[in-house]
Amino acid sequence: MPSLPRIKRSPRRLRTAEVVVAPPERRLAELDAHGLTWVHLTAPRPDEASGLASRYGWHPLDLEDVLSKRQRPKIDEYESYLFGVLHFPVYDKTVQRLNAGELDFFLGPEFLVTLPTVELLPVTRLFQRCYGDAELRASLFSKGSGYLLYHVLDDLFDYCFPILDKIGHKLDTVEDEMFEGRSEEVVRDISNVKQEIISYRKIIKPERATLRVLERQTRRFLPEELEVYFDDIVDASERIWDLLDNYKEVVEGLESTNESVISHRQNDILRILTVFSVVLLPLTLITGIFGMNVRFPGFNTSEDWWAILGAMIVILVGVLGFFRYKKFF
Image (cartoon, rainbow, N blue to C red):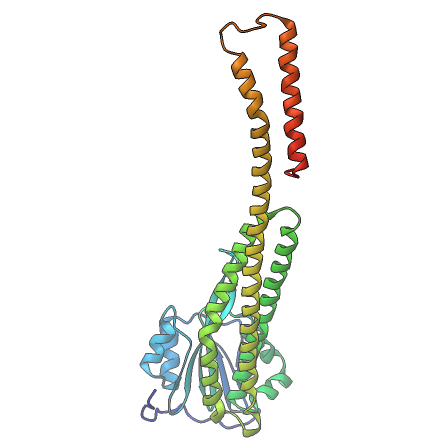
């Protein structure tokens, strides 16, 4: 998007090792080291977001995007900072579904502000580690805001792979259940796994192009020797997408196989029912004829009753023998 007129920056800080911190337990948590400030706030309220916008001079449209419920992944470039929106998978235990967690971030030469709409554990944990580990804080903050953002995103993408591993484990379990004779139960399990894969793909697909833009735009916030770092983030997203493509093919194959197994079992049941129907048809015909309320030869004689019964047994054995010879069962 076109660059806006230069926005007034916050007062420049001296790049020293002095640290000013706000505890991570507070809603607005802040770390300040080596002239770089990291502000972290989950689900910002309008007054909190407006205060940060006034402090750092953000564009009103960016503030509007931060407060909106859902934004598509994007990177907006301004003269003095970058504004980005990225999505990451978050498992919602209340509905037992995989949803998208949004991360809004502002990247400037002297600050990084992360504003997730829901708690993203990798970001929270990294902030807490930096708060409690001076050595880690120095190694991340001393190399600029771009390097710190790289580590935030790197932890988030690392968090994506265990979710993929769980999906892969579910697919293995579904395959085992399918051939243990529980095909009807597998239908529900396949549907759940398929829904997770679809949700994951909806999160990652629009983000791939955004990460390539981010890779280009963050170079001005990185030392020259660290410019290749964001290429690792792009590679991680591509690996995730490749795995999702593989899982999509696997779940479709399992679904097709399960339908074939169910269809085969239904055919077995129909074949058995057909055998019973054909075997009973001539016997029903005989009993129907001799069950008519009319006099016929041999009426009221025990010899004819045994003869009819014997004929029925012979027909029954003959029909069963014929089906057995034809390997119908």
